[in-house]
Image: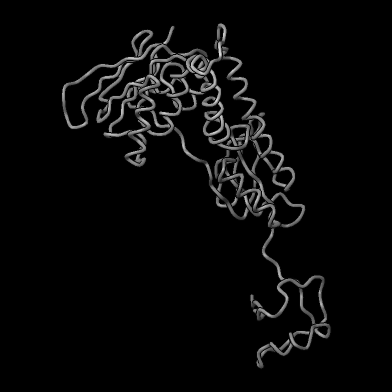
Length: 326
C-alpha cells in the first residue's frame, strides 16, 4: 500500500476530510513541484485499536513505578491501555513492601527509640513507655494504602484498565490472565511493556519461610521483635531494616562480604554511618562470607568465614519462638 508523505508545513492531522481548496496558498506552495495534490486530504491515523473492540494499543505487565507510570502516560497520549498487576495493589515493591513501608517503620521506630534514650537528656521526663507493635504495623499499612489508592485513582482518571491477576503470553498478540478473584481472561494488544520487577533471592540451603528466614518483605511483617537478628548483606536495604529492629530492641549483627558497608557508598560516609549504627547497638562482621546455614529448633545458625580465607566462625539468631535471618 502506498503512503502519502506530506511536508512538515501541512497539518499532521486533518479531520474531518478537508477539500484541497480550503488549504492556504502558502501551504500549497510548499508542496514539491512534482507533487500531484489530491482533491481531498483525509485524516492520518496512528494505528490505534478499533474503538469498541477488546484489543488494546498497549498492555503493561506489572503495576510498579515503571509499569504504572508507563500506563498513565500511554493513556494520556490517547492509547487504549491496560495494566496487569498480580499483587492486588498498585505501586510495586516501592509502595507496598519497599521504600514507603520501610520509611514509615524507620520514622516510628526512631520516635520510640528517642523517647526511650534521648528525652531525659533534653529535660523531658517520660513515664513507662511500651511498644505496641501491632499498632505500629497498622500505621505503616495505612501509609501504604493511602499511596496505592492514589495510583489506582490516577488509573481511573486517565482511563487505564486495571486488571488484577497474573499474566502470561499466549502468543505475540494475546495474554492469558489468571484473575485474583477467580477465573481467566485473555487480553489482546498491539504493544506490550514488561515491567515485572524483581524478587529476593534466597541463600542456598535457607529458603525464605518469612518467619525465621525472611526477605526484606517478611522483615516488614514480623509479629514480634526478634531477640537476635542477623542481616546478611550490608547494603542499604539490610541496614535500613536492621536499624528498625535494633531501635525496637533486637541485637543486630551484619555480615558483609566487602570491607565496608553501604554497597558502594562514599568511603567516608560509609565509615561515619557505621559509627552511628555501632553506637545504636549494631555489630559488624565485615570482609566475611557466609559459608552455610541451617535451622535448628528455635534458632538459625550460620557458618561464616573471612572473605580471603580464615578461621571459620558460627553466628546464630533467635526469636522468642523462632530463629531469624535476613
